[in-house]
Structure formats: structure tokens, C-alpha cells
Image (cartoon, rainbow, N blue to C red; front, side, top):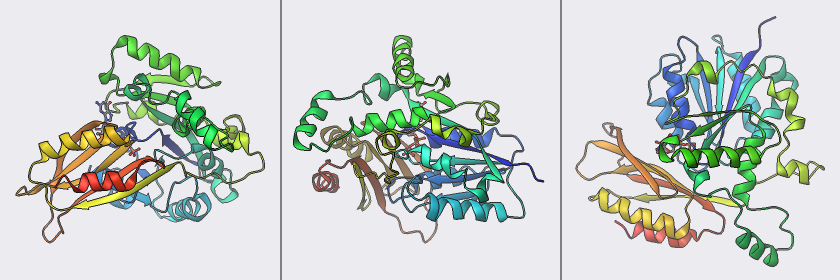
Length: 348
Ligand SMILES: Nc1nc2c(ncn2[C@@H]2O[C@H](COP(=O)(O)OP(=O)(O)OP(=O)(O)O)[C@@H](O)[C@H]2O)c(=O)[nH]1
């Protein structure tokens, strides 16, 4: 009988650094042939583009599969299982499978899917790795805003949980076999100490925690945990599973995303500065995409996590490719989408 293929699940909140860590992993995984399944919230496929662009020989474009029909935890039966089945039918089976969940996904339903008979006999979960944005934790992003939650609870008596961001953060930690405290370059030693205590206080189990900058963790640390996490899902239930033992399906109604499409941007410095203001004013959680900079042959990639914005030219526009500026905006459901769209469109 063939050995089961190990699959590593990489989860973590929006912008924590999952794609950055995987990109780094692909460059130092040695000869290991890796198949990558990636899932993203929002209709733009930025992560796929970033990972396909890294040109790793052990993980070619054919080995990168994008699941685009919603969060992976909601599409297990319709999308994830058929994708895995097809992957396992390939002549050249991968040595390792890496799955990047969307930043809003609950890892539990995905891990549970590895107990489905067709999958269980061939693949095992090597481990769940949860990437944490240490700077965001230090800034209180995941701390419960009691005031806001109490106000919402008055309006909506059915509200049965804390802030959706906090709850999701805890669910992703609860499922972890390894926690990567990323972005340590953005905080000092005291801050890091507080982040460690806060993360530890959120979970009953005590998975190993490591620190990282720019997702730089050796492949030998990330791959080969050998946990078989699918056998332990009962000990890692999400808030939703604990609250709805009847099996009622979960959803992501608390979050929304939309795409803004613009023409060429002549002054990117000014554009980015004003974008920061819009993000802060409307509490946009994540914004990313590509900018067509007037008169430049290269495409500018823009990555905003909260009001922190990174930008770099990632590749030349291809001959015949329609140039445009496309940005995906992700926020809580109550974010005023119309106002955000209008404000961004007014920047050009
Ligand atoms: N300063 C700093 N920036 C980082 C670090 N790791 C990642 N980033 C930046 O954070 C932004 C988001 O990183 P991604 O790797 O795309 O995050 P992600 O978790 O894949 O994001 P989603 O898939 O949208 O949830 C990018 O601009 C990265 O360059 C880090 O350790 N330090």
C-alpha cells in the first residue's frame, strides 16, 4: 500500500502573512514536490498570482490549484473533496500537499474532511499551522470591543457570540498544531511578550509557538510535524460547533468583499496616502490588488493590512494584456461599501 501523502493546512486571519510564508517555503523545500491548494476571500485571485509568480521548480503553475468558489470551509463537499480526488489521480503524485485557507476560513471543517473515506485512505493532515499577525495582536485588533458588542447585542438579541473577528481568531488558534507569530519586526520585545501571553490565553491546548519575520521559517520546521490532526478534530471545536451541536452550517455573513476597478493611476504616492485615510476611516480589514501606474511598463502590487500598506512592482504587463487597476476590499458586513467605493473612485 502507498504511504499516505502528508498535507499541511496553513491558516490565519486576513493579512497575517500566509502567502508570504508559503512563498518562502517553496524556495527552501529542497527537492520535495509540493502541490498547493489556495483559497482566498474576495474575487481577485491575488495569492494565486503571487505564488505562481515565484517560479519554484518543485511547485510549478500546474501544481497550484486555486479554489475560487467561496471559503474552503464552506465548500468542502463541492470543491475541496473533488479537487483532492483529482490531485490524487495524477500520475505524478506530490510528496506533500500545502493548503492555504482564506483569512476568514474556519480550519475545523477542512481538517474534518480528511476523515472522508476516499481521502482518509490516501492523505493525512501533517499539521495545522496558524500564522498570527503579531503587530495586529499587539494593536488590539483581536481584543473584544465590549462596548461595540454590547451595543450590537441590544439591537440584535439573537447575537450569540463575541466580535466576529475575535471569534475567528480564536477558532484558527484552537485548531493549531504550530503557531507562527509573524511580523515580529513590527513590535518590540515587550510587545512580543504581551502577544505571546494574549495568544496563549485564548487556547486551552498548548501548541508550540515560534516567531518569524516575513514568514521566514525553514521548510524543515513547517513540514513533517506528523500529527495526523484529522484524528483530533473533536478536541478543537470552533465556537460555531460548540454553539450548534445540531450541525447547523456556519456562514461568513459578518464579512463582505467587493472589487473596485479603476483606470491608470498617475500619482501612486498620493493615491496610497489617501487610501490609508479611507481604510482607517471605514475600518477596512484588508485591501489588495494591482495598480496600473501611468507610463510604467511594470504592474504595481498593493497589499494593505489595516492601514499598513506595502507596494512593489511585481511583473511587467504582458503584451496584449488589458491594463487596469483592480483592488479587492474586505471588511465587516457593516462597512459602508458604497461610501468606500465612492471614496476610492474619487481618488483617480
Ligand atoms: N512588516 C512585515 N510585513 C509582512 C510580514 N509578513 C508578511 N508581511 C506583509 O503583510 C502583507 C500581507 O501578507 P500576505 O502573506 O499576503 O498575508 P495573507 O495571510 O496571505 O493574506 P490573506 O490571504 O489576504 O489573508 C504583505 O504586504 C506582506 O508583505 C512580516 O513579517 N513583517
